[in-house]
Length: 101
Image (cartoon, rainbow, N blue to C red; front, side, top):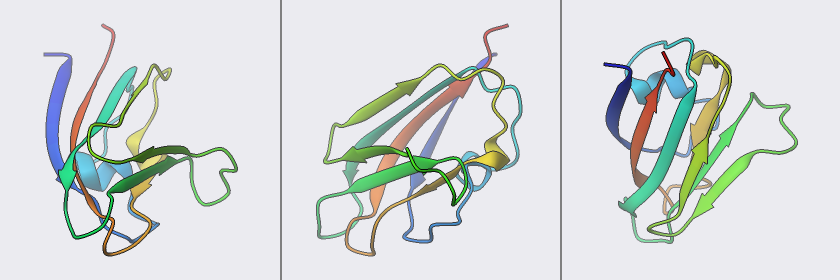
């Protein structure tokens, strides 16, 4: 199929690539949905998705139920980083991703 699901728990390591979260390098991603399902620790969960460490406009989620839906054009998962801001703010997330065709 063209859509896959991943259950992932973030870490506070800000160099964790989206490839790590997806269980391996993926290319041609045209659809990406990330939702905070529950807290993975004691604090309010948060998630940052960014295009490498130089990204000045990262996508951010905060709190259970927060969701992002992106329609990228053939993204490669290795180009992106996904992480939480600290050890007490890790999040258990649902990730759906796939290709248009």
